[in-house]
Amino acid sequence: MAFLFAVNVYRAATQSITLDEAFTYNHYAGGDVPLKVYDANNHVLYTMLAKLSVAVLGLSEFTLRLPALLGGLLYLGAVYRLSRWLFGETWLFLLSVGALSLNPLVLDFLSAARGYGLALALFMWALYLVAQEAGNWHWAGFLLGLAVSASLTLAFPCAAAAAVFAIMRAGGGLRRLVWRFCLPAALPAAAILAWPLRTATRENFYYGAETLRKTLASLADSSFIHSQPGAAPWLAYQLWDASQWLVPAVFVAVAGLCLKMARRRDREPADQMVLLGGVTMLVTLALVVAAHYAIDLKYPLGRTGLYWIPLFTLVALALTGALRRSRVMFLLAGLPLVVFFGLSIARYALQFNTSCYTDWRYDAGTKRVVDQLRARQAAQPKASVGLGATWRLEPSLNFYRQKYRLGWLQNISREGPAGVYDYYVLEGDDTRLVEELGLAVVYRDAVSEAVLAVPGAG
Image (cartoon, rainbow, N blue to C red):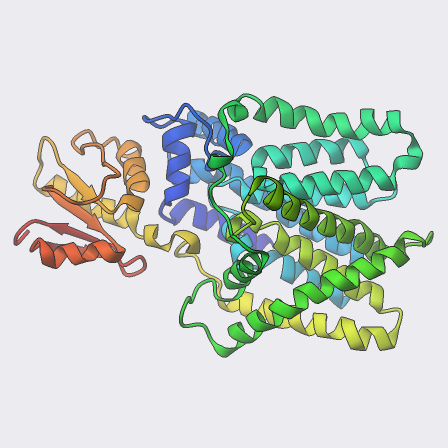
């Protein structure tokens, strides 16, 4: 886990800024084109922390990502504490740590400058505190409130966890529950989110899936075909197929087992997590479905459903631990889960990378492209340089224009590369313009395949 954190630091310091990270800075955390209305890109608590980091330490990829790195450290700590509490010094402890910490989508957001990883870390710590019979109520509530503030995608699981905790601790008295749990959860969320959300409408929450099947498929894609879309090995597709029936089966098994666990007085940690985490998972699903049908809110898709990966993994492994008391049940239900997560860890490890954030692979070479542009400007200075770029590269290019204080580089437009410019930065379908406009390619990035081109012979 220390190695994973060191890798996260390396990635934060070396990888090119991406579209969503740059948009966060350009429009919310200190850039020169701030927006006045709420957008789903604005993960409010993260934006506040990133703005502070940049103001104190200066603008760079690392300073913009510093809150995510700290969130990643918190997440790894939560994984260790939860796994150790659940399984002690057993082989299931190692399986749990590996499955919770090596998923490539989760790893991406333990260093990328977005609120998902920070929110996930806060949620996992809250879950750990709530699971303790003598847990710290006020801290658990406070962390849930901060998690929602870091990313609104955690609103449903945090609300579900809070509701489950309130029901489980109702015997302590309603007044005590409100003062020691509900208020510590509500106050930070209200204080941080109230002002930014004043302009929010349903149209601001535009990213998502139309069906739960697409949600599950997107999370399976991100877990098993993360780094090799279209060219993944046989194991990746077998795990993808297995997840499509295993996940619903675990939901059904957990629903049945929760009824049994609720009546038990002598619950072990694994039983406690099956009950708490399982009901949280089921209530979260109910809230997601209800919001979809009530207000046409889209289902989670990929990174917006990131919380499902550790939550499901934790509950499924706790289920495996609970089934160990019965050899027959373990062989029938627990062993398939052990095999699935063991093979998943192997697949996760094979996708380990430090070259790009896969959701934004097209931005992996943007920093190198700008370095090439700076070198050419140093060799042949111009007072003003116009650059036409593929629209989704605009935020990251403008980020580097501000970072390096490139006064000679005109503000890059998001209108696309059509027109006459001194330079062109193209990726995807826009690379056809090289031939159509007779451009000369002066640099092609090996990872992102973006190109830097100039008119004529260059």
